[in-house]
Image (cartoon, rainbow, N blue to C red; front, side, top):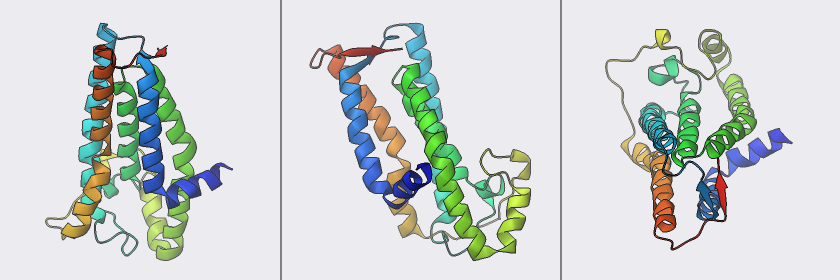
Amino acid sequence: MLARLAGIVSSNRVLVSRIFAITFFLLLVVMDSAQEGSIISSILFLIGLVLVGIATVGRMWCVMYISGYKNSELIMSGPYSMSRNPLYFFSFLGWVGVGLATETFTFGVVFALTFWIVYPHIIQREEEHLRVKFGDAFRDYCGRTPRFVPKPGLFHEPESYVVNPRLFRRAMGDVLWFIWLVGIIEFVEALHEYQFVIPLLRLP
């Protein structure tokens, strides 16, 4: 069932992202942080913001390397020299960051668990495709490069790199999602603060 869910998410990412954003907004409207006004609230938001910043820059770095090359060449340099799936690694940091930016532990834990339930199956599906397409080259790459968590000691990059600017520009919208979500969080918090909306539940 998880594999089927992963297939649906992988094939309908734009639609799934929009549904998630709407659902997330509605949950934020009816929920508030039990840590509101405390030092813990500020620390959670700061950690979340740092993770979102790292995720945004990291994802843009990854997108730069695959723009114009995805599914046509096996990318093994830059962020892809340290991890076979650096884009998903930075996405994980981003989701956890967005969760913590709500100033609750609950959203951070839920987003992390959801990622680990769904995305390993997506990664597995994509790697099976690459294994079939690139054969021994991909198997050798797997043998020396971690699947998920980057290994900095493996890092190498070319002196120059050609990027398709049109594809890179189109991908930037997906990269900025995490920043937009933090903006939504702050907007809803203002609605609560000025009592335009009264939250129904306070989360730890």
